[in-house]
Image 1: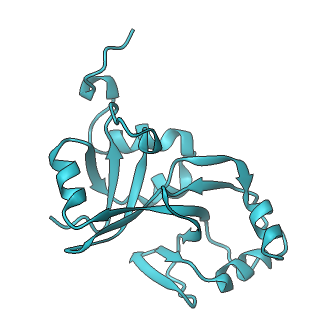
Image 2: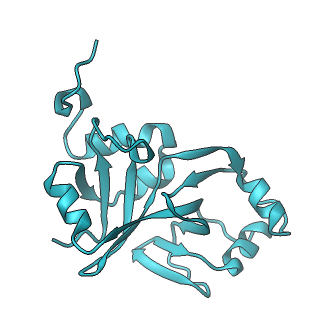
Length: 181
């Protein structure tokens, strides 16, 4: 099973509160494990103006919510952007979807030289060898192909339901073991 170019969609009865209704972009999946970024959990008290200020950079044109990418490497910042531009530390995930961790991209954003959409994400999610495959087999996650529109044009609070609809689930209550009033 190769989960590159996939989104993980948490099932409604996800027990881990860090991943409740999470959508995770799988950035890398190989025989040694997997790494991904939660793309729909904004951090309540942190926005990009604060981050850029702390880094000594000018304010970006758009002040966005910083996303909580997961419980691993919480002090590491990732920028997910919808283009193929490469910076000092970039990996191309898909055509028009690149992940960068180097400050040169932040400098371009702060000087309004990046005209594409982007998200700033703190932390990531990681799985050891065979761990993610086991979780999928235990019905913890659903999968679907990456959808650029979902990532960049759908408000964070609507992404989980939209991801479910991409795989034909319009009523999430039908896949949950939880009784709803």
